[in-house]
Image: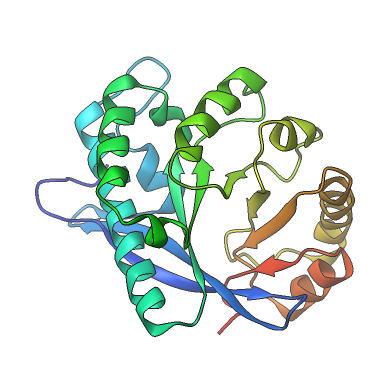
Length: 232
């Protein structure tokens, strides 16, 4: 675990390519925290302080709130520049159902100008495919107060997209971790994801695309949004 006393949350902003409109439409806020013990990034950072039996509210809350602040700062800059790009900010969905953390999230968002929040897409992370519809809906209700477009990161093996559509998520997201997956292993799952998302009227964000072959497979699967090493 990275010590919070000797480091702070930073973020890289990864350009998100819109394959349909052939341009950069958003930036993904990828948080990280570095100390002498190493660097923890993205979803792993947001899960620091949580396990199956307990939660360290202070650590979880700090990592999530500071990630949001980094993302909102970027969204403010982009809006000032007038390009229209959005900022995708990951948020720990499993933590957001805790009253203390939800209260801090709400207080933070209330202090952000509404027009800035309209440039933000919250991406719910740290949830499993076993999450119930009531759980997803509880998270969505909190997010909808401030952001009408929100996404959920799920496993590439997910078989049921209807929960997310029913709870008014506008998209689902997957991460390939910038790994050079063999195309014969990844093309089939990408086709299935594209078909299921289309059937549920959900957009798809594919994070961590590392090769031209994977990008081509994503395009063939009608996946609209991609980011990763292949996108500059």
